[in-house]
Every structure is written in C-alpha cells, then in structure tokens.
Image (cartoon, rainbow, N blue to C red; front, side):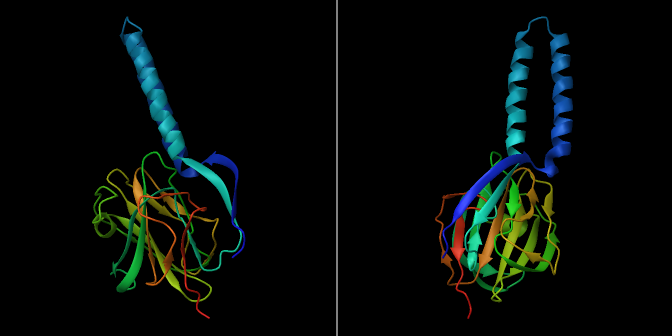
Length: 232
C-alpha cells in the first residue's frame, strides 16, 4: 500500500449553500436594522448582532467545501465519504439492494461539520435511487431505514459492490446526489451534499477489514474507513 498523504489546498464555499447564505444575510440585515430603530437602548441591537454573527458563522462552516486530494494507492480502500463521527459499526441485514448480510459503517454529521460528501471508492456507478421517508434524528438506528435517503451503489474495479446511503436528518430537507448510473467514479470526487444534520451509511461485504472504531472522528476524503478483500 502506497504512502497516504492528504493535501488541503484551499477551502471554498459549496455552491449548494450560495442561495441559503444570501437570503440568510438579507434576513439578518433587515432584522438587525429593525431592532436598531425600534429600541432606544443599544443593548438589544448589540445582542442581536452577536447572535447573528454566531449563527452566520455556523452557516459558513456548514457550507464549507474543502478541496482535498487523497494521494497514494486507492485499490481496495474505502475512504470516508464525509466529516463526522462513526455511530455504527456492525454486521446487519441490508434489505434494499443486496438483501443479505453486510458490514455497516455509519458516519453522523452534526450541524458543525462540513456537509459535502465524497465518493468513497474508485469504480463504476451501478445504481442511484432516491427514497422518500421520515425525518427522525439522524443518529437513531431507525433513521437508516425509515428516513428519506438516497442510495448509490459502486462496483469497484475487481467487481466488488459497495453501497453508500445518504440519509436525511430531523432538520435536513434536501439530499443532493451528483453521480449518474453508468458513470466512472473516483476518490476525490464529490458524491453529493445533505443540508442540515444527517448521516452517510456504508454497506460493505462481510469480512471487510474495518479500520475505524465507534465514536471515532472522520475527515471526508482522508480517513480510511475499510480495506476490501480484493478478488483476484
């Protein structure tokens, strides 16, 4: 396995957040202007400005789009599709695509994480599907099956299929998935974006070497989640 390095070239804002950031700025400006002219005391205005700055700072962090390059060998590697915390590492039944036992690794993204999603493995997109559903809190076990989600199946160069599931959370109302069926995909490319609190589930073949632990923090397109058994 080649030496693995990560270069953080620069940070930019994700295009999915431009409209939200623009309208949030307008609303905050109007709100603070109104408070400034409705109270004789300056204290309410100062408090409002401080709270607005904190809120907008969280939005800016949420819609960051770090430009990251995974360097080194990627054969057989499953790379973290997002920033967040590992909330599930277990063998379970996958009933939407494989209909058999799979190793499941789930990464929860809090409001304070970057919400850009990366392609977790090199290969070919075999299936892309979207399912309507509920909006339970994303860290709950039932969220994986019952919440609104998008499903992306990737076939690696050696023929192994893995499944990445983008799951909406209690606040999330929009899941964006970029790849189309039949396209080639590679680590470093963006898989999509989920707005406001969510998770990404990975379903891997039983016997896969999992390289992360429960509650471990992950960095999208950097942390190695698992190593597949490459078919010869």
